[in-house]
Length: 333
Image (cartoon, rainbow, N blue to C red; front, side):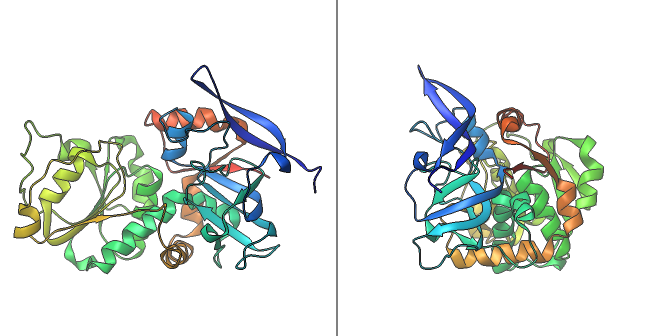
């Protein structure tokens, strides 16, 4: 295989300017890694868009971005994987600390790979990608902390994005009434088709006029999946019902959360941090099983658009501009 040639999207830096170019590479160009994977599909996530937008995600160049991949093991020096295995890798520093999934071949650490679950193709797995995995981890965390369908509505913020849209589908499948928060009312039909019972405008959780206003608000939602952070997360915490939980996994609305101890000590609410990068393998496997089981193939297909490598930079720019809807699949075949 030493003469194998393949395509990859390479981030290059010159005079502090980044450019993303589709290059033809050989196996000798790939960094070291325990497992060589022939990549079938990847997907674009917010972190990929940040990397392509020079937001400090990648600091050593040249580099291949892409925090997700699904494909087939070609060679392996890892005891848990053998040639021919169908595998998924999300997170683990891929597309950040080491070259990622926007390449037809990738060398990766074996500990991060999980088997492709029964009931999912490689294409479907990457239609979910890190976004789907994160959504499934959020829903699992809410369930572990006592969320039940009869308790009241569950709020999902960033509802038309990858995490939000899949979270809605998962929660609806579990029998929850889902309120979808979005600034895109024109997407109402799309969100109702996913399973949202109603839409909530962004103004419902507006930025407070002064710091500390979100101390305690009316008890509105039984639980929430928040992809936004910042003042939105503060408002959610202040308005959760007694014993409610919010699974927090995003920061597009800001990294600072101005809140108080009162929601936690007077209402017993739970702020649940969700990490999909270093998440232990057993929880990853459980989350992928939930995605395979609880998101109908037709719903997933309706969430997904497919592009090629050359289209990735333009798609990343749309994500950073807030124009994303659902999931964008990158076909490496």
